[in-house]
Image 1: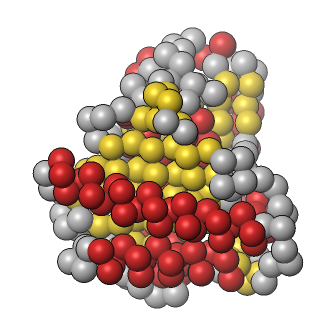
Image 2: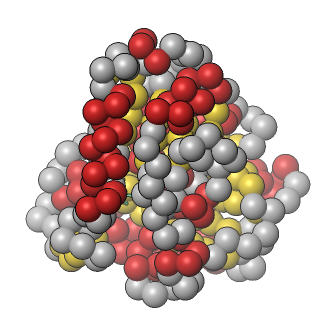
Length: 279
Ligand code: LIP
C-alpha cells in the first residue's frame, strides 16, 4: 500500500473508532448484558458485538477487498488467519472485564496490517479521552502530541506491566505467578491493569518501561505493537526472539536491553497460536 492509501485507511478508521468510542462511553454507564466465552471470566457484552459490527461494516464499505480479524467474529466462528492481504484486526472493547465493572480503563483497538506488517494502529480510551495513533514510519501520538518510550534500560528502575490473561489453565496460572515472584523483587514495580492494548500503549507513552503477556491474542497487539515501535521502543516474543502477531506472546520494552533482561527472567508458556485455535 502506498502512503496515500495508508492515509485514507487511517482517516476512515479514525472516524469509525470515534463513533465506536461514543457507543462505549454511553454503554459503560448502563447495565450490561454479559455472556461468557472460553471460560467464566472471558466475557463478552452486547457492546463488544455492536462495536465490532459498526467497525467492520464501516471499514468493509470503504475497503471492500480488505480482510478482517475481529475478536467477537472469531469467537462466533470466523476464521482467524493473517495473510499478506490488507487486514483490519479489531478488538472492539479491550478490557471487557474492566468495562463490565465500569472501570474507565478500557479501549477500542484497530490495527491495519498488510504484507504481514503493521501499517496503522489506533487505540482509543473514550472514557479518559485518550486517542493513541501510529502510522508506519511516522511516529506515535497521544491526542496529537508525539509520544516516546522512556528509554529505561535498568530493570531495578523499571515499572513493569504484566497481565494474568483470561484462561485459567493451571499451567498458565502457575507461570503467571512464577513470573510475578521473579520480577517483583527485581523491578521498581509491577502492575496489571486489565487492558492489554492500553498497557502496551502506556509503554509507548513512557508511563511504564516493559509489558509482557504470554497468552493474549492478535487483536490485543495488532495496533499496540506499532505504537511501541513508532515511539522508539522494542517489541519481541516473550522469550526475546522475533515478535509473531499470531503466536500470542509479546514483550514490549523501552529498550532492547530491558527487553532481553526481562525475557531472560521469564518462565515461558506457549498457548495454542491464534490461527490454529480458531478457523
Ligand atoms: C483481554 C485483555 C486483558 C488480557 C486478556 C484479554 P478483552 O482482552 O485486555 O488485559 O489480559 O488476555 O486479552 O477480552 O478484554 O478484549
